[in-house]
Image 1: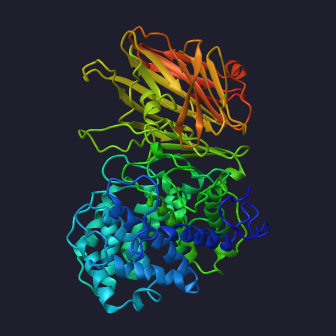
Image 2: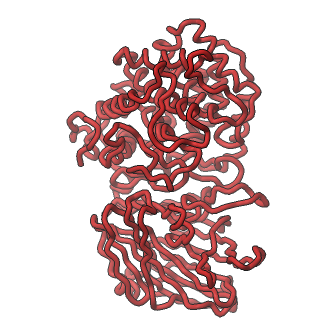
Image 3: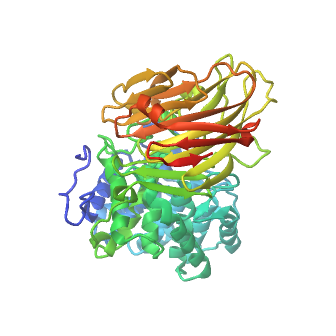
Length: 635
């Protein structure tokens, strides 16, 4: 597939049989991205005011974001080439530093104040300055260096949000220390000590208190501590050693998050950063903390960037947009402005490795999903990953991450965390009207007015080999916010199939509804329904199906929507539903399929057997699922 908006060199299928990409492709994409933003620079080059929806931080902050995040990319490009780049690139960002820190320039950056967006961007500036010391920092006029130090010094003794933001202070003050400027060692140590509180094992941090598991684990919580170590020059220090060990543990399972087409699983917030998801892979290689063969590092990273580049990212203007492929604002957060997607710059960390490094010269190795069907249990976040070799699809089953603070704090649901499953080939329905209905990948009680219950807090019950469980407290509109009904769900994996066993408490009159994966495309998916099943199919053959195996009505349906999904304007979600509940407890078993194969739901319903045995309550019931090959799984 050609890259529609980026001129690329010829592919090398000997060195890179999977992607065809070489270091030259990475340099070409970096150069294209840097050229794309150039027309949007302010006269003094201190801000890049890109078109698009502004963030809640305002125009000037968004302009600083444009400078800082593209400076990070420029820094990797400059340092990776040993300064052998077009001199105008170095001059452009040096001039921006001078203007941005000059209060009289008319383009001055906002001062760093407690919990301000400027803190995020200052960290990128500090990292960029460290990586380009010989070409930018060391050549700056002394007065400009003093102004940069003065601006960054707003961090000293300052307060950040109590999450990954603590690390922006850490790296920025470490840079101040490296240039002999005043800084607070207590700030640095305090930030690093705080993330220790969030480390839960096996390479996984929660982003702040709670169960906040997503890509911030890789592109922030693992990344910045080791970037700090690069600035401090203490890679062999005890603290850096611990951070390298944690990164290694995380990376052992991380290759399983990427599909055969290179796409990362679509889960969590800030997904407009796209291929920033490969930043921890490069950091592993940079620090010797990787468990990967060099050819796998490059295959994973090149595959992800190639995936988006071939699908029109950047766009015809040369810009990264607020979306996944095209602009799609419902999939973004209000803190994201038009330059926010340029945190994708972190993906280019690999350019800091010299051209003769093994990651650039070794032959590509296949991803796990390219070698065979894969299952991976991640007990800390409460996730199961399962990938299928024949179609390259990777699915994430979620029984653990809800992105909420601990009780008794208020909590809310979010389409990028609350669902039972995500994948490399689908996205949740996130437009407000669709999210209000919350059909896809959700088990809900539905009240008489049609309002579904929300999976707000996920309470994990266990994650193991091909099996994970959790429960949530369902509430119905009109119950005065006091009545709660426990819905306990267990996912059982077999090939491309996920069987969900639900033990449901419900009031009389409520119905139970469950949806499968939302299929979205540029054209309307074809749909079909039958007794106990519903199917949607995209033009490329990807199929989403739900089959009611036990406890469901015969009628099934497909929910359609427009402009509700990051993968395309036309979306379809198959679902099954029960009759009005008699009250009390019930069991519902569903087969959920997302596959590149043709799905035959009628035959599947006949071939997959379910037996329910046991005592009075759902907790005493044993559910056995028998698959066509004779495999038995229990819930």
